[in-house]
Structure formats: structure tokens, C-alpha cells
Amino acid sequence: MTAHQDQLVVEAFSGQAEEWDRALADLPGATVCHLHGWKDVMEDALGHRSHFWVARDPDGAIAGLLPLVRVRSRLFGDYLVSMPFLNDGGPIGTDPARRALASKAADLAGELGVELLELRSRVALEETPLSTNARKLTVLKTLPGTTEELWENGIKSKTRSQIRRPMKEGMVVEVGLEQLDAFYDVFGTTMRDLGTPVLPKKFFRAIADVLPDEVVFLVVRHEGTAVAAACCLTYGPELEITWAGSSRAHQKMAPNMLLYWGVMEEAVKRGVTLFNFGRCSPGSGTHRFKRQWESEDLPLPWLQWSRSGVASTPTPTGTKYQVATAAWQRLPVPVTNVIGPPLSRLIP
Image (tube, rainbow, N blue to C red):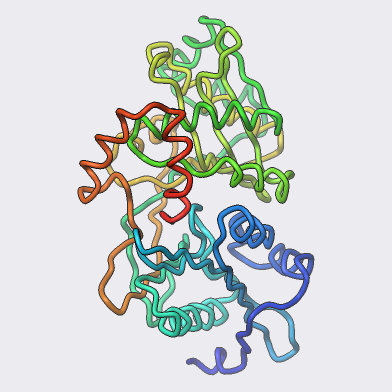
């Protein structure tokens, strides 16, 4: 450790959620993924044990924090992640505090015997026992102060014409916590079509209950039927579209274009200045879709430690699962929505 790190005390957090969130608000790098409420969501909705750590300076003030969650199963493996199922959550605070927390996470991973420790961060961190894996990136767009300016100057004319198409078809956007069920119907179908198990509905209900001010559900409807939907997370000046889906049957009417425009409109109305499209793989179709919105890439230098050389958390869309993915896509949605959640909660 450096001299600055020697002056820090890294310890398990035993205070109240309010103390954690107050400290979070003053730390550089804070995101919605660092809120204390995720401890309840991960433990109560998904059954995963949490390890929340803080780095304190000599005066006892919090200089950094790190939420960790262990996702363990015989089927998919044993992982310690910050934060699982989300796109951020790695160590934040001063650089010495971040290094001290990363080192503590590596020690804990070794003690627990997990296959992989993964700290999902946006900012690189040197001088730690962890390596960097930049297999993912996120896509960001700066938002203007009004929706009029966003429409006229924030997107290309080609994109505007694609948004007008679902509008001409009579599609409308609805926003609110009451859209949770409609969101899940669309999202569950989309995940089945992708051959991927869907997260439990109680996970999203828990987010709505624990973090009602930070979660936004938005649905695009056509003749009363939900045809595209998103679950977004917001904190401070940023809104991230974290989970989204759209109906393949309505694909020609481009409801996903109205969905993303609707989320951006909502973000501007809330005073948000940074729109986060969420993580994706470089060069993928998802990546190309996100770049058409006059946005910019941000590589994600995730920190990792593995005693056995595990390179990443499992992905059901990987080569290893191709046969299972093809079979999953042929199952009825009511079936996948029953057998999928117990599996997806184990894929961080």
C-alpha cells in the first residue's frame, strides 16, 4: 500500500442506509448502482449475500465505498461482483480509497474461494492486485436543456424520420411505476426471443419498492398493447436505460425508436444531462444501434481477479450455451417466464 492507503481503514459497513447514501452523494464516481438499497434488492429478491465495505480516513469520515454481492451456484459458478445484473458499482472515492477497497475485495475473493471477482467500473485503477478486462463498453449522450433542442439539433434527420414512423402508426408512450407489469411482459418475450432466461419479476418489483425515485418504467403502446418497454435507472445528472425490449411482431413499425426517444424526452424533463445507453459488446448490432443517436463510446475498464484464470461471468448467449439458446427460443413465453427466473438470478 502507499502511504495514503496506510492511513485508511477498510471495514465492513455496519451503519444505517442513510449514512451510506449521504457519503455516496459526496464521493466522486457515485452512480445509482452504489445506493445502499441494492443490498435489500439483492438479498430479498434474489437471495444473494452482500458485502458492503467502506474506507475511512483517520478522522473516521468515509473516503470510499464498495458494494459487493456473491452470486453462487453449482450450475454457473461462484462469483463476487460489484454489482451483479447492473453495469457499474465498482470502488469509488479518492484514488487511495479505491485502491484499498479493490485490494480488500481481492483478499475477500480469496478467502471465499470464488472463481472470479469482478468490479464494474468506468474509471481505470492502477497499482492493485487486479487485472483489467475491457470486453464491454457503454455509450453516452449529452442531453440539452429542452426536448425541442434535442429533436432539432441532438439527433440526425434520418433518426427523426425513424421516430416519426411509429408515431404515424398511432403508437404512444406511457411512463410510471404502474407500467411495471407491461414492461415485464415485453421484456420476458424479448429475452425468450434472444434465447436468454429473464430476470425474476420480483426483482423489478423490489427495485420499484426500494428505489422508487431512481427507477423509471416506460412503455410504448400500439392500440393499447405494449410493444416496446424499458426499465431505466437514474441518479444525479444521469439516466441509464438498463433493461429494454420490443416486439418482433411489430418490428417493421420501429417501436424501439419511439421507445428510446421517449426515454430521452423523459430524461430531459427530469433535468438529466447525461443519457447512458447501457453496456454492450464493441462492434455488436446493439452497439451500432446506440451509436446512431449521436452518442460517444466509453470503454469500461472492469477490474478482475481470478485464482483459476476465469475470464468473465457466464453469458447464456456465449458459444458454450448455443444449443441451449436455440432450444430456449422455441419454448412458449409462459414457460420461459417460469423456468427462466431461477436460472437468470445465477447469471450475474
